[in-house]
Image (cartoon, rainbow, N blue to C red; front, side):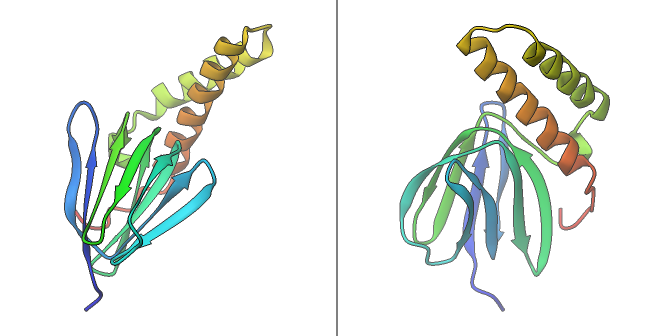
Length: 139
């Protein structure tokens, strides 16, 4: 049996996930990062994108937004603005958000408006990507 560690993913609305897992792969501003049991302790920023969780030899994918991750020897905690399983994603809403963000990016924007539109577009694209890989996996 593979070595496991506790993974907890928390958003302002709920405790999204809390269980023993074998591995986690997610995006950081520096690129993709994988975590396994015994990883060196650290705190790292989390970027918008898919998160892949391996539990009992099966992979499950979700989408998370910006946040922070604290890695300890036996536990990893991710604090994210949002987290969704593929079946929770409203595809029509994600498509509409993508369209709105793309339209805003075509117009003349202030720097703050541009960054907000880029972030909205990234969230919508991540949701659409993950919802297209709707494999049930573990519960």
